[in-house]
Length: 250
Image (cartoon, rainbow, N blue to C red; front, top):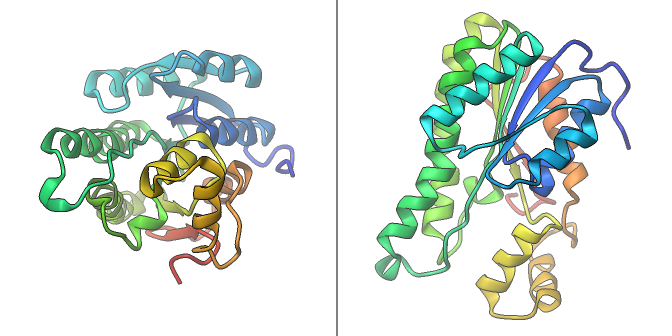
């Protein structure tokens, strides 16, 4: 279901990880609601997403300080301001017990999943118009955890601390900062995680994971995007951890 036309009229949004399913779907939902949208990703397909929604695409590393600063500046120059930022780029790492977890993989996951959102917060909040919204994509394992995912779970918990700090710092300007916590989503990123975690085929792994979800199914990217839209449109919600996990964190 598309958002109401005009819900984001006059608003400008920047989305990192904009070529992936959640980022691209959120870009479409924002654009359908009337926003001007800039999508940023290392994947060249970000230009296809931008062309589809009449926005702008930037190929850039969301964990590189210069690249993030330039993406924010480009957004403001192109569309005249910034109202919404969605830190959505992410990396999973590997499945391994803590004692055997590779140091370099841990560092890379932290770089993408923690440094990336920090940089977007830093540069977006510096120019964001009063009353804006900053959303960080965490995960259900930013509220829980499981064996073998130390880097991913640690990074997704870390951004909750980032969000809570930013929410208090930005509140005097009416800017709201929140995290979303999707459970398993029906996309390639999640299915790769499931195969890695279980050692089973994609279909078998999906069934195993659905057995852990009280609603017994994966979320759709659209369901996550609608939750992000809710946080982007205003209201009295800030400093919140919004679970979109079918009951997994209950």
